[in-house]
Length: 166
Image 1 (tube, rainbow, N blue to C red):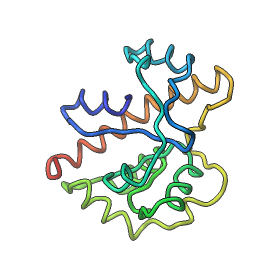
Image 2 (image 1 turned 30 degrees about the horizontal axis):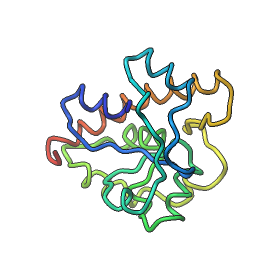
Image 3 (image 1 turned 90 degrees about the vertical axis):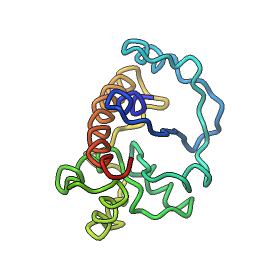
C-alpha cells in the first residue's frame, strides 16, 4: 500500500501486489494497522497473500524486504534474479547506475550483467529491511518507517523509467 500510494502521488498508475511465504488470508497485525492509520492508510481490509508463480510470472519488478526473502523467491519459483531485488538493493543499484532515459525493462536489462547471485547469499545485509513478524512494537515501527521512506525512493526510481515504459 505504501508503494501504491507513493506511485499514485507521482502520477503512476501501476499494479502493485504483495505476497509472502506464510499462509494467506490473515489480517494486517494491529501494530502495523495503527502505524498505517497514522499516515492515512486503512489496513483494516488488507489480507495477507501467499506468493505464487502467477503473480511472479507477470511481475516486471519483484522487491523483497530481506535478502533471504529474495533468495527464497528465486529458488522457489522460476524467476530470473534480474527482476528480484531487496528494496535496499534496488535503491542502491539506482544510486550507482541510475536510469538514463530508459524504460524499467531496459534499465533492468542494463543492470543485469553487473549483478551476481552473491548478492542473495548470507543471512542479512545492511540494506535489508528486517521483517518484524513476531517481533516487538519497536521492530515494527522501525520496519514501517524504513519501508515508508524506501517506497518513496522506489517510486522516484520507477518514475524515472516511466517516460518510455508507461
